[in-house]
Image (tube, rainbow, N blue to C red):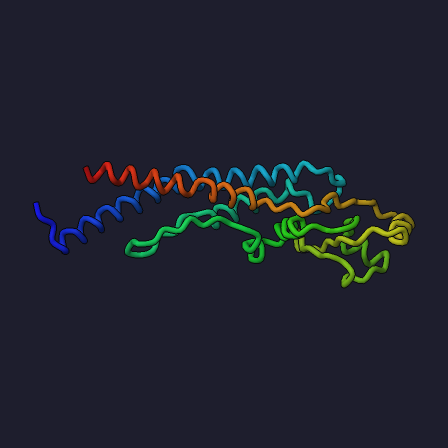
Length: 203
């Protein structure tokens, strides 16, 4: 059968549609679950870092907030009418619109040179510290601060009976990097697999 231009375009459209469908399936079946697992595993590794028992910044307490964030931000976007499929993989930018509890991850990812201690808002007032000199978080509607650890601050904390809650993170640790590397390594394979499956449908 001779293919005129119209028939040829129909074939091309059919093949493209099948490729998009198979690629979508690959993303949903393979990519999305693994991306979420990689990020959550990295988070769990950070949660193992030793923190004071009274710390309000324990990562284990914010696990559910991260799961909720990933549910919304690890996805496959399909353009209306077809023609475009986007695998959305989160990075640090999503923390800008995340719950306050997850702002802790941004600080960890950027790293804090030096040694810091955690102080509550009440303790800050008792010691007489200025909040402008600290990194602040809002946890359960209360301010929590990280102050650079100095001899003078440790002395003031001791005199005020404030426990020393050391901040264990100094080197930058981004929990999203490995997930993005995973996608970079596998995207060609997912595309090739989608093309092969779509081609078999045409035969």
